[in-house]
Length: 207
Ligand code: AP5
Ligand code: MG
Image (cartoon, rainbow, N blue to C red):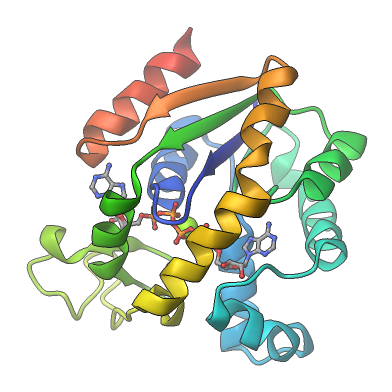
């Protein structure tokens, strides 16, 4: 099954994708994780996109499309995948349609107030890409999965979160209509605990 997770920054795409990838045994393809890895390793791509990521803007479509196209051609995607954070513009969605068949786009609906509170408490593991919230952690400094030090993502500062939300409204939100017109949109209430929201998604996928 080829699944897209849509939703504003902080709506829970990464959290749900990490659970789905275990349950469905198909890979999670997170463009944000791919870009952060390049940033951390200071690759030529990482150096090029550093200011964009830290400022909350979008990496140019042609760069992002090329990366996703190559990644989806890898063998582990043959039985399906979960796209987390791609597409993020109509240009990206049209490019994706030209080389892949998408089964459904799941849109996580979360209000802005909840988003700000989720992102201000988020902790991220740069080693295993685990995503947590301070309220779930006994020790907010250590990853409960791999023991690495947890960090606060640079783009989770208040100023950058507001910019990411602005970019979402103008450039990414139109994808909801794009997939609705294709009959592929499924909207899910993203408010509630992680397990509650996850159960809603599984119920939809099982139908
Ligand atoms: P990306 O990493 O994709 O960031 P994002 O879309 O802004 O989304 P987030 O990762 O912030 O949120 P999320 O929806 O994954 O929520 P999460 O599960 O972490 O992209 C980063 C940057 O890379 C972009 O700004 C851009 O520059 C670039 N980029 C990436 N893709 C691109 C593309 N296609 N084109 C161009 N540029 C691109 O959850 C958030 C918090 O809430 C966590 O603390 C979590 O524990 C908590 N939480 C989650 N679900 C629940 C729940 N149900 N109840 C309570 N808490 C919850
Ligand atoms: Mg994410």
